[in-house]
Length: 202
Image (cartoon, rainbow, N blue to C red):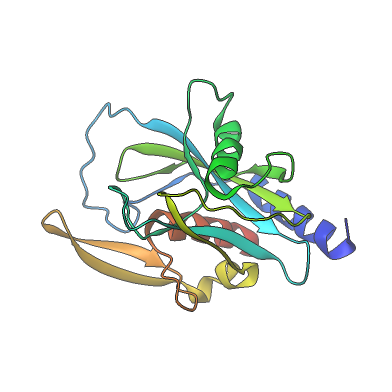
């Protein structure tokens, strides 16, 4: 591993060790009343940073417009923890293989961000990893419309985040966005990335 890659790994590892609670889709909407005793389903997503050539880039997906939930949205590879998964890390690696063809032995996991609660009832663990080797991305037919990457520096810059809002279930909901070119990164994905960016700046 090159010196810049080692330095990035150390910086991310230090950021993940810093104190701080989790995040949620409700962070910017403090008036939201959440039901007591709600049960969240565990999930894992892979925050994969490619360092194989040039500047580090974050790998993301664009969900198929045919999907019932979150069609066309930008997301990390990942999904719910299945019965056969050891933990959220295993789920994230398995889903990344299924969704984008990323061999599970390529990501070098550094650590995890605190859980993020989604409006759809998931407790998502963001698993941060570096990928040094190249791989041939293979979008899962019917689920993933596109696999792409954005510069890591862009999503680590807090100044690139914008708070926007829209009507949702009769109320106005505020959320983070971190647009890049034609890609509108928002919602849970943007919130988790902003959590990483904030930790990296401490």
